Picture 1 (spheres, rainbow, N blue to C red):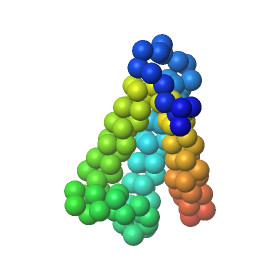
Picture 2: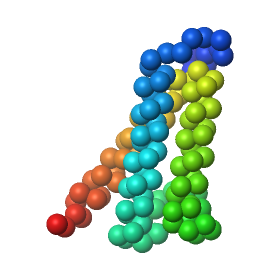
Picture 3: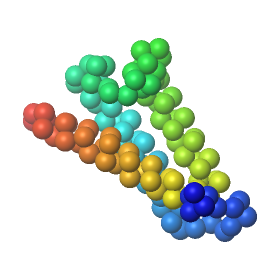
Length: 112
């Protein structure tokens, strides 16, 4: 666990900054792909029950936007705490568990 935690007073790191940009990019892409997927196939396409509930309670844009705002805020908190390895791990998880499946689903069903 010591590898995932760093002290507040350590200097900024390029690795941490790059991982934070990647994390925000993954969140934005997931939001856009979710919006497109729900627009094409309906709200049942969303597999995450938290996002589905947020969309049901606040509407499509507010639900997705609010969920992504919370996720990005928590990622920024990790970045400010200098827990860059965790941000990198979450970025990789989002890429493999959200971005790749959405991309495959959208490309397979894309009709010009």
